[in-house]
Amino acid sequence: MEIELERTFLLKNVPENLKDCKSIEIFDIYIPQSISHPILRIRKKGDVFEITKKSPVDLNDSSEQSEETIPLTKEEFSDFLKVDGKRLRKIRYYYPINNKTAEIDVFLDDLEGLATVDFEFDSVEEKKSFVMPDFCLADVTQEKGAAGGILAGKKYLDIQPILDKYGYKKLVI
Image 1 (tube, rainbow, N blue to C red):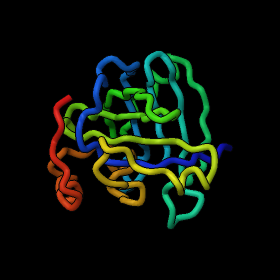
Image 2 (tube, rainbow, N blue to C red; image 1 turned 135 degrees about the vertical axis):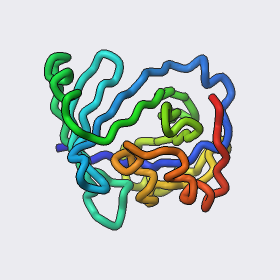
Image 3 (cartoon, rainbow, N blue to C red; image 1 turned 120 degrees about the horizontal axis):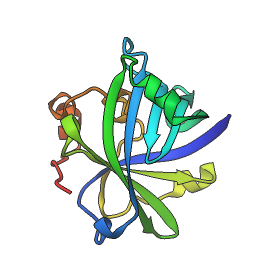
C-alpha cells in the first residue's frame, strides 16, 4: 500500500504550450455503481491497464490517500468493460512547472469544459507549503464533488453548482 500526497485545483486558463506537452488518454470505470463515491477504479491509461483502490487515510483530509494498485492484462481489462460502473474519459497533460509536474486533466464527453490540475508531493511539508500556480483558479482538494469517483457518470450540468461556487468558467482546450 502506498500513501499518495496530492492537491487538486480547478484550471483557470490554459497554460502556455500545453498542447506541446506529453499527454495520454485515460478511461476509468468506478465501481460499484450503486454508491455515490466509489473508491475502486478500473483504468486504461494508454496501453497500461490496472485496478486501483484509493481511499482517504483521514476522512477529513482528501489530500492523503491510501492507494493499492494491481496491474491488469488487456484481456482482464476487456472483461471489466462488461461491468456496470460509472465511467469517464479525459486527456491528461504532463506540464512541467517549478521542478514539478502538473497533471492537467481535460475531461471529455459529458464533462467537456471541465479541467483540473493535480500536484503530487514527496512530503506533508511540501504539500502544505505549495503555492498554487497562476493558471489555477481554486484548490478543490477537499471538495467532495471534485473526486474522480464522484465525477464519473456525471454531466457538466450536474457539477455546475459546485463549479459556480468557485467562479469556474468552461474551458475549451
